[in-house]
Image (tube, rainbow, N blue to C red; front, side):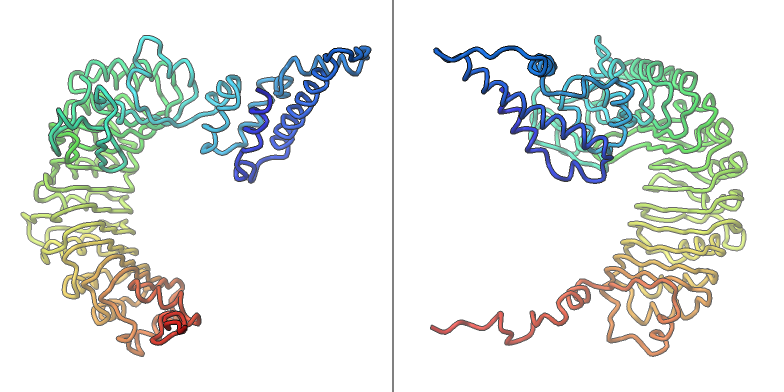
Length: 498
């Protein structure tokens, strides 16, 4: 038994001791020395117990050694919980699982240090034993979404991944890409009630929105007064009514539906108006699959004067006119569009759009940019933007990219995964941006080094930040330069002669 413990302790990975305080290293070193002493003591005892051997006389030193071995090989039992907590607090969170395997006491103390948790089994929270609330009392970030999906009766090799979630699926009962079953709203309300009463220091919560009366969210609002970030999946207009009771809510993400996982009732202008009047201290708002239009976005802009960041994801349900409502967001600094198939239908003329006065960053990620009129309207609303980023946007060619010269005050331009933009198209835009200071070009295969003009090369030399990796061939050439690999007839490709 002692030999196996000694081997397990010595097999601890070396990266476990990197950047650890000296006190923590000393504790583990003493545990190794104590384990060695215990092994030697047992060997001496066995040799003295043989027939004909002489029984040694007891001395104070031996009695103290025997008293030490009564504690086993864990010398940390002599330390108080408060002192050991201070030592374990220096361990990074990613090592908590390994540290908790040392002993039951260490596991109990590590649980007191945990601040974030992703729940995988709903019975761990709302079961009769309430194991989650009995082990963790100081949680500040909790994600309940993976546990809300019903698990198959037996472990399944079929795993469905959508966004940050990977869920097991029953191949015999759940067809491909169908809506996965979730627990009922009453169970969600009960779980939120138990969690909020046991962890009043919550600051971030990710959960499904109950479809009934939202009593669970109301309890969270009362018990968790410090909650600042709330992520609601499968939300509806009625589910947003309890949000008015949150006093310090600053970040809200509403996900109405996710393809392959679930389909919710959706959030319309009514729900956004309820949110705007109830959460006036919003700083960041993320709308995913919502049915918003001019009325909903304008209500957010009028009531939430502190709103600085707005993200619109999957705008298939977005109605026309929301782009014109951005002029009511007087303090909006960042506008992010993700996975949008269109920008806006534009029911109003371009001259009536207005501008967003405080906008600084415009980021487009995985969007389809095929409508020239809507893209021009977006740049007109964000005319004073200082940073523009395109990441893997379909349909963005030289003609569409040239519209961005409307934003004359751009200081940072980022292009990633835009293969239809050529060197000539890039040059025509950046030469028109007189205040450009930073340029990032990554994985844009249409931009070639051999097509760079002298005017463009001289502009590159004046930039404060310049990141240039247009294609994979360029990166490979830079890495292999001077090695001789890749040249025709190189020594590594010659056939050996016998």
